[in-house]
Length: 502
Image (cartoon, rainbow, N blue to C red; front, side, top):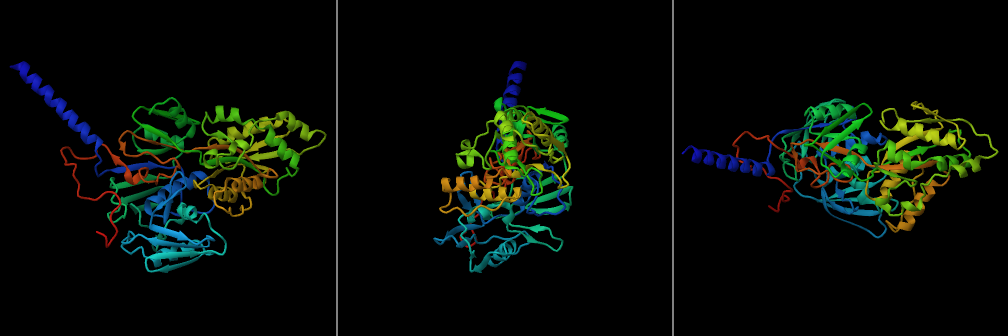
């Protein structure tokens, strides 16, 4: 009799465990997602000139609050956002967008054509933006073949501002509490046109270094953090789902977490300011030839990213191999033979955890070619060479080329007609590199990590955390429901029918 009872108990436990496992894999609502980021913004907006770390953090945050007219997928194809249809004339100077009906801002105001036109017009004074019924028209004096890629950038999120300057959007989350530079609490929006998010809230702690994030992650005090790309790269090369995070003074590993690596979406490059003492073209060319990129990528970057001599990465263009990354110190010495060159000061961003080591290695390569380079963390503007990291914010190559050029202080390339012509794109990039005002070094990815309880999230390969299926709005948390709670939930999830079509 006792044996039968034991068997019955064992069967009951197996059935209960199976039920829990099934429930564990099914999405459910509730819980607070805890996120940590490096930047410490004082305002919730996206300035024109910010460091890449600040750019990604603000873009990810604001994309939870607002929406753009369109989005781009990894192939650069436009997908509907607040606009459901669009068209342009043959000259690409006139664009017409039909807006999604029934969309509201978080304060209940309608996201009307007039409201959208007013916001976009203020962001782009050079455009003529007009509203008509349920559509918005944009006219430009110059052709804008990459208009869709431009509108998909986070700087074109449709956001209104309250009396204190806080953002009011149409996205899946609304601002519940804001402590500048420290903490942002977001609450799930029940009126979002994309449907209600699974989690009830997101708490974002700002101003946390990679080391601080790693420690909090290990102590289960954070659900999603930023990671060093070289750590995530090593984890992916080993083919494991475990996370191994490291910085200059910390390391972390957790078998229940997962790491994610984007495509190379940042450029690490040397830039010569206008007042640089390195005005001799032979000196700049010699420095470019002296740098041995492959050991830096293999050792200092631990295999993350790609050695580069082009502004745009190969996944965008397919032609980066045309730009040689091969070091040639002998030719560098030949170029400088018989000339006297000034000692140069190379500066780096002290907030960039990899910059100092990379800068010191570049200085060593330069000295081996007869070029004296001194490394300094000063960003006073008196440097001769600046080690910079810039964001490549769009899968559209023309848009990313223009944005990279702007951040690097280069002239804007001419509009490419026909759009996406590989030959025209190559010539535009080549023209920006002529004269060695910029020496590209590496294309590097951005990385993130999610803790064990995070479900339903696979960050997009563009690093923005905002694509369909890769947004924090799609995340749900395990073990957040009271025991025995029914999985059924009347709250809608996913894009909802437009008003008037229900």
